[in-house]
Length: 261
Image (cartoon, rainbow, N blue to C red; front, side, top):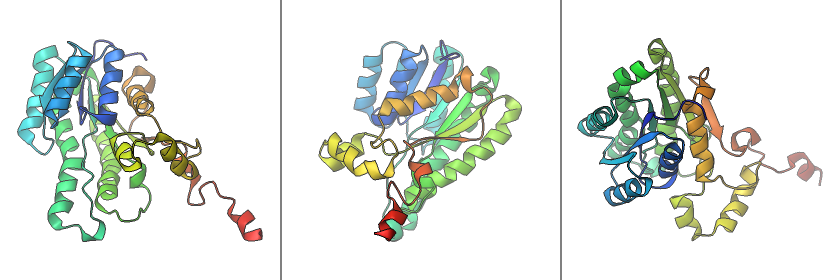
């Protein structure tokens, strides 16, 4: 994709899973990456794997000092910053039994952390006419059993993206979200007992593609939104969900046919 070579990206939550796939994709595209995550061992191993253009910095997105240090590292190391990708999140969610403390913790990590990082990155992104990609979710758009906090924070991200896109347009900074559908990652692996076939089968009624997504498919969408190919795209959401959002509550069931039977 055009416009990625010799650029610099900060990717939060990128030591493992989808975030790590985003970091790998950036490196392959010639972008230098700051791996910002609390998972120190995994982050260091990934940076070693990706080579000299990847640097790990332990970063707690609920800490302003950590976020500032992350921006400072990118600018000190490379004298520029082009992209911020906010992947870091917590799945803390006890539905209607969630406490106030859990509510605020989820909001702080999933929404406020990315907001503050963009604030600190703004002067540098302005210089490079850079881009921000926030991670939304299909969970932001529908009610889901047993959950309140995670969908709430992801819904907030979608609105935050729209406002950031408007307020940062004067600086030439584009802001968008990606919203993954079910994606084969650590959680799916754990819940299914490492059974991808079973996971695809369960996901099939909810996704037009009949399967869950691969991490690289999400990463490629992120790179597209950062690239020159997306130069006229801002303030919007890119669902990378195999048709989950478009399918609707009837899933792939012929509801009227079932009624006729």
